[in-house]
Length: 96
Image 1 (cartoon, rainbow, N blue to C red):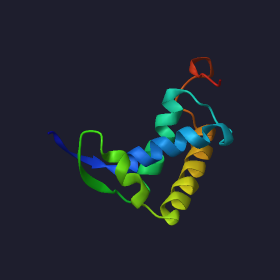
Image 2 (cartoon, rainbow, N blue to C red):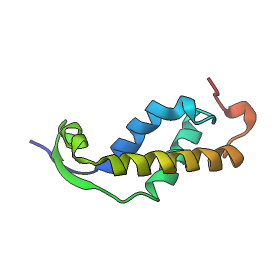
Image 3 (tube, rainbow, N blue to C red):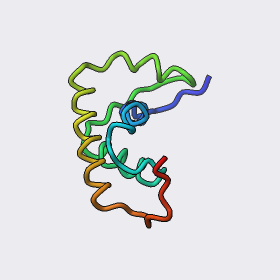
C-alpha cells in the first residue's frame, strides 16, 4: 500500500473552484484557473494528511464550515485579481 503526504487544502480548493467557477465572472481557461487556485492556496492554511491511495476524499468531511467560508472568500478575491491582471492574451483564453 502506497502512503502519501497530501495537502488536503489543495484538493478542497480545486473541488470548490470547479463548483463555483461559473459564478466568479472570470475567464475559465486553465491558466486563469490555476492562478486563482494558487492565489487561494497561498492564503489558506495547509492541511497535510497522510493517506493511502484513494482515501483523501474520506478526509474532506473533517473540515468545518469556516474553512469553506474562508476558501470561498479567497477564491472570489483571486478571481477578481486574476480577471484584472490575466497572464494570457485574450486570444489564448477559453471563456466557455
